[in-house]
Length: 416
Image (cartoon, rainbow, N blue to C red):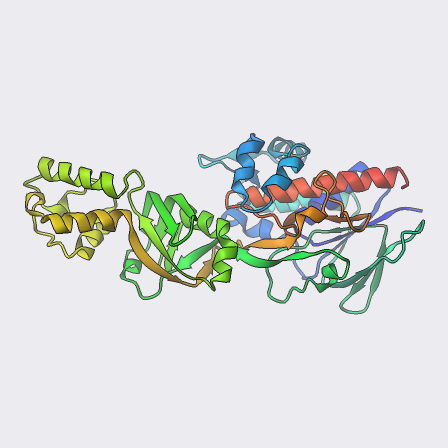
């Protein structure tokens, strides 16, 4: 009789596991179960509808630094399936990827539909059965006697059977309950949101929405969490790579503090508080006769520069030579350590990512198989692994999905 694999989750990891298992063992009967009425949702919205498939990085040592959680686990896994393998896999399906200047990789069509169609066509070609609007609420596997199968119970009362199960559901919907995973004997790191922007309510900085700086340093006060990079002012607060990376690495700390915290921003990342005072002294000498508001020595957007001058109550008509020492010092601090109170977060373009999931010490990184229950596998965001923005979360999905598929195929072909 045919062995049966049931994959839970119709996202990137679930599809990748199902397709690769089918390609490696055509005799497997594969059913993919999705709790909602939509498939590959994140693939569709990623990268503004272009799908950020992976990142143009071919060094495992460098790549794993982009994962706030799961770094050591992925170091092992990436030796089995990495960026180069992802690119080649899609190329064999006639999907060519391109790299942009920031390292993000997209299909050359600049359309996520290309990736969705590729995965759907591969699933159809391999006769994978897709069942939607079925929520799994319980899994049972009693004894490990020969020929025993998993029993999966759906919310509407159906019972499905399988020889292998790969759990590849993830995300952070509030209704999602993980008790059925705990009942299997697995422990779960409580999921919290990652990859979000900071809300700064009722602050005049929001009047500068749309303005960005290329090299800012954002630090969460009272912690070691800081990130450097582009920063964007929005109508609700701050966004941009520096903030998104910071939210990712500090995700659990910020959740514990109910997203009520303070930050300091260095708007001129090439300077610190002492070096900027030296720079200001030099500017006073070189631009002595020029008005402060008209001469911006740090390459900041003009409106942002005027904002900083006004925040220090400096007369915009004053010349550099006439700037009092007290206000000069104040300007230096304003530019390198401006303080903001953050109250709340906003999801970044619906590309929510979850920090949390199945504890990694309970999973074999070389097979994605549970160390507790044989023939039970995990892939994607259900694992306690998450990356920053830039294609890293999809690479985790492709890698873990492929590894799970390889092991399922190996076991099923050996009739174990």
